[in-house]
Length: 249
Ligand SMILES: [Zn+2]
Image (tube, rainbow, N blue to C red):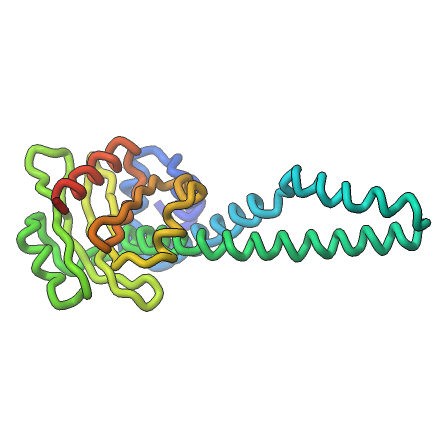
């Protein structure tokens, strides 16, 4: 298939609506094609901005009522000049309030977006991991001395999961681990960072859960923040999360 044909399918891919076989083919193609992988990254970022803007600019009905309630009593006694001034003030107030709410939420969602981008970039890259191994006793020590924290990898024997390896990654200035697993031909990224209040806030919000078309799980254990991002099923995400939590005990 030509790049044009693949690029026409990228949006469907990002919505997780591309048939399984084509998804694998596209991911394989993106690993070898810089043009298509950068298209995928660009469109995933664009999608996120549209999603955010659409959501955050929908006016909350209670706020609308409050603004209308504040305008109406004043309108009665002041004639049209006063009414116009009142309406202009209310409109300005609304813009200021909405944009400050929007900025706060955007900052929170930006973090999820950055993690999603890291996941997509890894999937599209030709060398997905720096330490290639299915053995947790090889992968875990590789991170020693590279990160300011430690974590345990789960035992996967007898499970549908396979460890593919790991690499160093950065979220802003903070180094972390990105671990790759596969389950039924789906790839899961597990990000591990030192936990921080802003990470906890961003990931705890319910709004984060249905981010884009990916499934996401996040939890904190012993000062370490774990985030799973994948197109695999919610059940698989919960399963892998439980295995990580058991390994941390
Ligand atoms: Zn291509």
